[in-house]
Amino acid sequence: MASFQNLKNRLTAGRAEAGATSTAAAFDHRVGAGGLWEEMGPRQLDFLVSQGLAPSDALLDVGCGSLRAGIHFVKYLEPGRYYGLDIDQRMLDAGRQELAGVGLDPEQATLVCDDAFRFSQFERTFRWALAQSVFTHLPLNTIMRCLSEIESVLEPGGRLYATFFESTGRRLSTSDIEEPDGVVTHIDADPFFYDPDVVRWCVEGSTLRCDVIGDWQHPRNQKMLLFTKSDGVR
Figure (tube, rainbow, N blue to C red):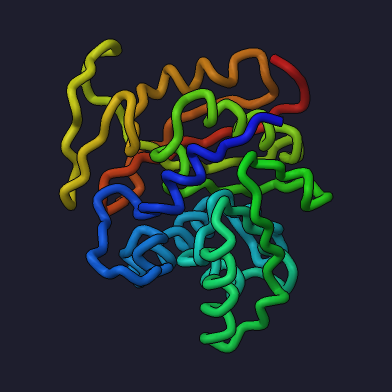
């Protein structure tokens, strides 16, 4: 299988969500998760609960990092119902420490380090999945790999919620876009922006349907996409 080493190097070197940087030489897993630690973790939980996530559901957290949101999901979900995948083992190790630090058993979370979205390692299917600030860092073909892998583990009717930076110009515009909090997005560099129709094209002919939810009050203006798995190929 093709390696994503270049992507891994890029994410583990900076690993900050767009616009969040640190001058500290030491590894800071909270900065590496994008900062906004106290704000974005609860926001992700509140959003999925508003969409119908119940404590008895199992959740796949794609790009879970150091569990900025994972801590809140583990608290909310029944034991053993949280599954996270990330490209950086250091972030996962820090996430386990964060769980222990708030009195939660790290064993309640099933965490896997992987650089190619091999969700089949969890050996189960899911009705709920989240990719917060993942597509914002990925070129289109890598997004397609993620969607291909998620299609294989979503149950019929299952959902993947994924954030992205939306292109606000014409389709072939190469101009950078300024977002809140000093974020600047690009057509061909991390952080990336995308036209939603391009992402819809990615899943044509698959069992996934892509809908735009749009604004969900993200402080850096990331918008929300919803991918829903049907019963068969469309």
